[in-house]
Length: 310
Picture 1 (cartoon, one colour):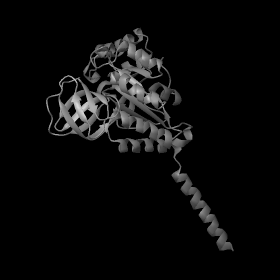
Picture 2: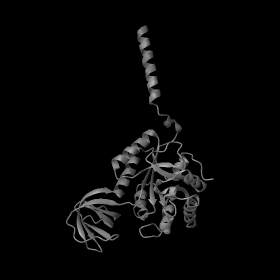
Picture 3: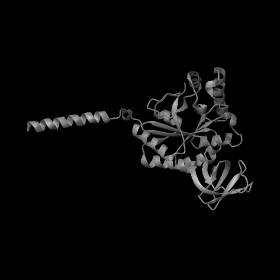
């Protein structure tokens, strides 16, 4: 009987120790895991494509704007920025001219960071946070950023803990590998971390047949027969064709017709479709991890109780 009692006590002790080892202290912070989508540069697909995706899935995102490109061809207009803000999206600064800030002196850095914010604010846009072009920053850049912004996002392919580095928020580039991104979402949930993903232009990459007729023109509208989808031609590389989604979903077997050039080719395979893939990632998060919040950068900072601008 005495031996049995000793064995039971030993088992209970080992079990309790095991529980202590396995416990993740990050789960004691009372925070939920977070997911943020950021779209860099201010491409017009932010409004034409991303806006539709996130509204359809009742989610939100952040858009980082290079102010020197506002109103230029294929970039957002001032009115589109205001509409995005009205819809609940966050507008961030991405400097005036998109330089490598590490290559500039303090006066130039000050101009890039302060002027971009002032330009956006003059349009009626609220701006609290920054994205460094190319994710490049150093101590001087971060010091200037702290004068004007609540936070700034860099890269480094890492997740953010409960106490993130305010002026070097970590992020991952979207790499068109949906399974890899899903694994990152899985890990952010299990580790109670903040995963920030960043994108640029939203496009579709397809493999086309080698027997093209004619040459497509950059920026022309494409019609996809029989699916009825429409796109905007971007470029061709080897047997791949890139275009921006405008309406509908193209399908393998479609004939692609340039509406200006009258060039044609057959769509053999869809390599990736950013519009479909992002929607799928939002659905994956909502269905698999209902406690994981999809937030803007500023909302994430609020949840993580990061101080506001001074």
